[in-house]
Image 1 (cartoon, one colour):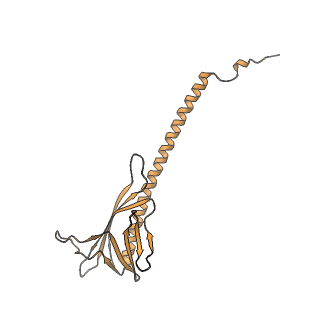
Image 2 (cartoon, rainbow, N blue to C red):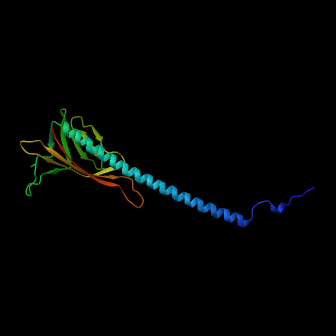
Length: 178
């Protein structure tokens, strides 16, 4: 009969400490990778939201201005501003489209709102992940030609990325009326 020695079953304290230290290092590396990937995902999402909303707002405003029958606000200014007459800017734009007066303006939460002045219906144009600031419309025109409207705004992501802050971009375009 062969007897097994019970002393050789199990792990020594040294083996357990080595195993635990290797696992701790491994877990710290995995946690750091997870945090890094999560921050990169947030940053990518913020950049994407700002770019996508900026392109949409420019396209929507351009489309509406081009199909408008008339623009009542801001008032007409000289096509080539001179030092004494630089044109008037406004933080809202009012257009008549298909006999409905629509007003574009910022609300207190940093959202661009389109309001149908006949039905009083309001719709938010930018997404919930972005905030609009510095909205300005400048109407350029001359008595014998087409009017143009300059649109300027700054779009910021609402997500704050660790170490980088908010994603922010300025947008500007000029759209001619028909």
